[in-house]
Image (cartoon, rainbow, N blue to C red; front, side):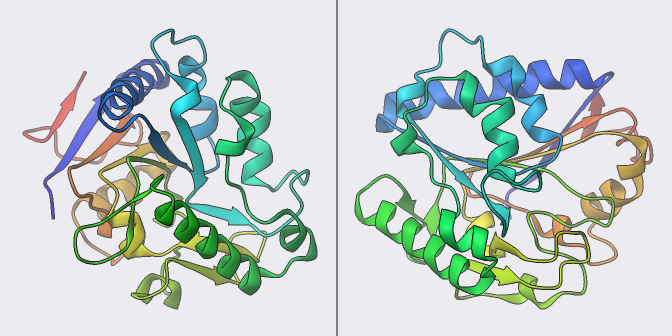
Length: 257
């Protein structure tokens, strides 16, 4: 496992600025090295935190390829949809080509077929590997994304990998499904833990005092919560506001910026 870095900011606004800068820097790096940048989004507040990227002049949007670490199995225009959230608040405001955006299968989402939707999304990822858009991780054969932008729930879940649910144990599939999510809606698809951890760069962005206990547990690897198992190939960084970091020890790896 690579060492976990944490960056703690005095305010959510300061965190947003630095999160945008971090993402823009990686965009420049990978667009120069690979002529493409594969980015994995999640849902929740993270999408609004990307707003500072919209006016960033250095970003080569045509080279971005967008995927989702998890998705609610519903229609694209449903308010529960991570795709809809990302489109309304971010993707519709930047010139990423539509053919570079890979959402859950539209029909299967609307039908609510979680198992088949997971299979179809895994097929999509394998197709992008075969076309050289997504790299593979060393000898494992798992897909390797350039950057994943993740969030965490108060219970310590990431993506749709929840505490005390078996999906966290899946070691073979790239994408799995859940029909009994403890957080509504119940039907979801999600990257498996090996796929999440094969990314080159993983960012976990967490704000607010409701997340303080799970943040501490994850970074101390206690309570067995999913977010505590996050790693990456090159770098994993937790972006925190002071409220989320309020129960962390104030020394060494935990510095306030």
